[in-house]
Length: 162
Image (cartoon, rainbow, N blue to C red; front, side, top):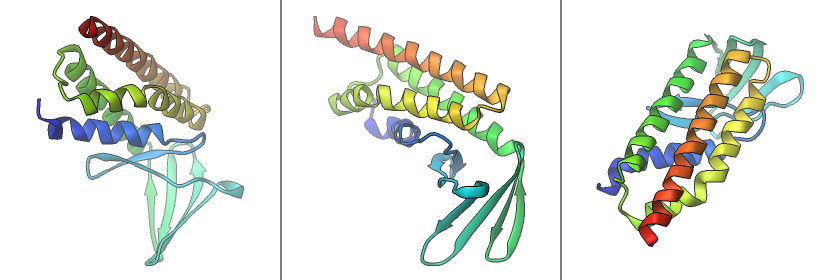
């Protein structure tokens, strides 16, 4: 396998590994992206040189976002897209690892180093969605599946060393 085919999966795993409790991820250009932290009163402020985004949580399934005076609402569909993308990435990872398609040493090392941080990132997402039982359980199943995939990968690596 050429490494560039696996790099999208690897990049998304790295983003997941960066998730802190109460932080969210979104899908931007078919890749994961971290959303900023929330301050007091559920207010989220993200600033850069060109604009400021302020989001205020309205309910568990909808978000209102004001960007330079532009108002829009995000619905639970965004969360479904993230969960779908998570399942897709885990399936891709499982295919690569269970079929022993990852040959590059640097990728194997990256995967070994990312195992605990990725699981921790998923558990942190569970904290974020602790009041949404469906999302919480969905993330638990994904994390458990990923732990199993990583254990199989470790066994395969140990077997190949012997």
